[in-house]
Image (cartoon, rainbow, N blue to C red; front, side):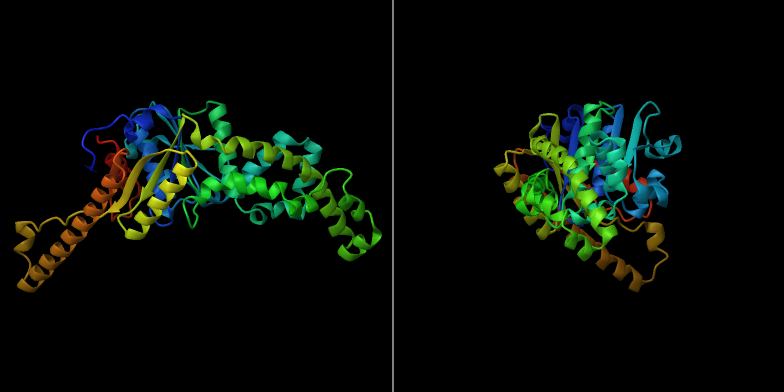
Length: 369
């Protein structure tokens, strides 16, 4: 492990894993956010007994490491306990409960429907064509369902710690804007036009025969059924958005950012930190991922088997890798200087197809064995 800060501070990532109920892992695209979230959860097995990592779009090798089938990846659903065989490979104590959940917005939304509507209303709503397309129609619904899922499990005290891998987005800060955006959408005149409450002029308009003729009987009836039933669900979503907008500032929740040594990723990290400060959300840890390591030297035995041309090529490769490593560590040091009150940890670039090895090495960067 290469830790830039000297001693472990009061607000260290190690302490966050011990004390928090939920850790939100955020960062821009391509920084290895999902693998880092899983590695944080793995590191937490040293200090917590019941752990869940909620992942959004796991890479194939990560999914295989956790033992997920393609069907499980596509369907999502309730969290799955890691097998004893996988726990053994990852070095997790047999007494620790380690679960992995793959977010499926449609699955979570169906739970919200069950909690909010009667069985008859829910069945009627979920049979409509508009409902089946809802997760694609409403921007931010994936993020909203992530909130719904995690807060339910926190309230039910099913886990000591939940590590949430945020959905992929162009900018990391988009995740934190979703509650306000969905609330604005639900309260907008445009949405109210299409999801009216009783007595509004639009519902009266729907009773006109020419509307039915224009849309066709089947589409007309299904649309009307969807609009009238979804208006009940809308009230629940509005209520939850008010609560979720405060979720990030709760003491039991911590936000950790993932970046890389690349200048574009560091630039986005600065923007995210400023954005969070404006909303009084504390960034409590930074993991600089994909940090290049210095190349190992050739053993005397291997060197003796190479000709002079190959030796020269290896020498150039070693120098090139050393420069990449020094550049990466310089970026980590600059990050520590930029954020003196936040622990900055570097996680190595791992060139290996073995998902278990990647998780273990990254976890050991967070909490040394």
